[in-house]
Amino acid sequence: MSLTIPEAKREAITAAVGRSVRETGVYDIHTHLYDPAFGELLLWGIDDQLVYHYLVAEAFRHFDIGYVDFWRLAKEDQAQMIWDALFVENSPLSEACRGVLTALNRLGLDANQRALPSIRKWFSEQDPDEYITRCMELAKVNTICMTNSPFDELETPKWDAGFERDRRFTSALRIDPLLLEWDSVVSQLCDAGYEVQPDFSGKTMDEVQRFLRDWAKRMDALYVMVSLPPTFEYPADTECSRLIDGAILPFCRESGLAFALMIGVKRGVNAAMQLAGDGIGKPSLVGLENLCSGHPDNKFLCTVLSRESQHELCVIARKFRNLHVFGCWWFTNIPNVIEEMTRMRLDLIGMSFTAQHSDARVLDQIIYKWDHSREIIAGVLSEKYLNLAATGRESSEAEIQRDVEGLFGGSFSRFLGR
Ligand code: HDL
Ligand code: ZN
Image 1 (spheres, rainbow, N blue to C red):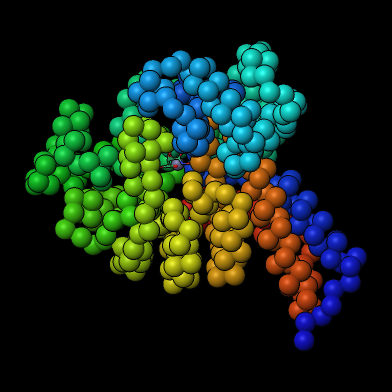
Image 2: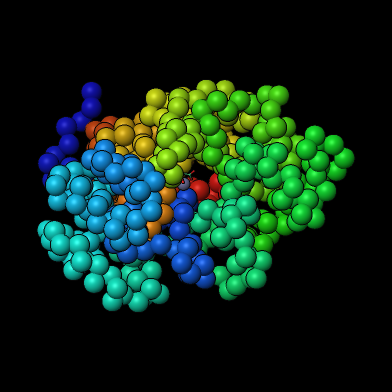
């Protein structure tokens, strides 16, 4: 028979959880932000927020303009079109729209204003370096993990030249082209001095491992990562599966790095929308299960794009301690699904997961992505601690704080052994 909790205790538990969730600094373990040394690659400000591909996708539903004509417009003109369609002619109720206004409000601007030029003027007056610190402080983000690709010609020159790292920005080695477009990267690897063959003959797998070793060292990468289509299978007679077996997993075991799989994205279902054109598919997670069971000495991070796959992902995590589940990725990063996923994870895998990542592409977004998620996570956690109290178990504020720190990056760091 569960205990009836006095109202005062209910309020005390809820307040303690809310305080801890609101105040605890997070490790944002997956973003598309950049160390300030990358200059223009680190996006920030109202126009970059408005042309974020989430808003492009939503705005095109109101546009008559053709895709090509839209992309030909200057960024400010694209932003104005998106602002007019989603924030003036319609109420900005979607998660990504509300996010822009949450960020404006938290930055001290009037989120009720409709005139974009006055907002734009405020941003033009901000100092970039100070602004980075301001956004991180407002969002209570302690550390930002970047997504760094050795195949991205915009960022590789900076890595080649070397630069002094901003310690607030760590790195993840992103290898999608290696696994998903092998034929197109063979020549790039050869040009870079790695002796690889299209048919994997000769020293190919050793050379791919050397490539990974060189870049992981250059970036001081925390983990290796890939996004995978819903058709991903492992093991399979595919170049992806052969490279995972022959190079990725041996390298990760040797280096102690985790291998992160982000499963379920269908790239370019509407390619004319560019980044906004990627879609979703419900994957089989048998490949993930085979990876975890077949390679107990490898560590795997995983997040899955489809809401329908979240329960299966939690059950696989229950079976394999070398799997760490993280975040509410992309199309699952909406309030009702974040709530459902957080509750499901707490119910099935307890505290051993990372509750959220921002996936921010524009610096200012960390403010809203974390504000919105903290509110939801606090609600679910309060419910769980109240359920616990009903058993007669007392949770101290220190225990609640410990648990929240774990969900916000501590469990991730322990899993990586960092
Ligand atoms: O593949 C990924 O890392 C995804 O997060 C994509 O970058 C996607 O475009 C995105 O930004 N989602 O939030
Ligand atoms: Zn991402």
